[in-house]
Length: 24
Image 1 (spheres, rainbow, N blue to C red):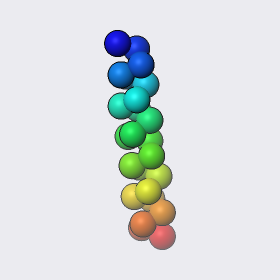
Image 2: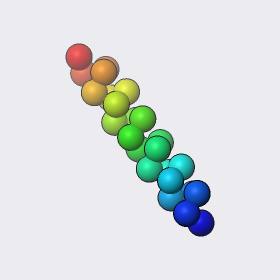
Image 3: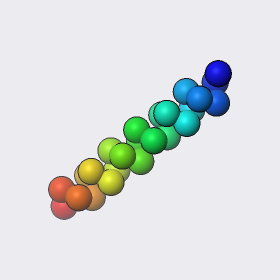
Image 4: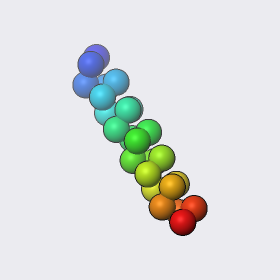
């Protein structure tokens, strides 16, 4: 169960970084 939470968190972080790069 902990692995799923880590995976979801990783996807959210990567998505936020890609969105931030896209804004630049």
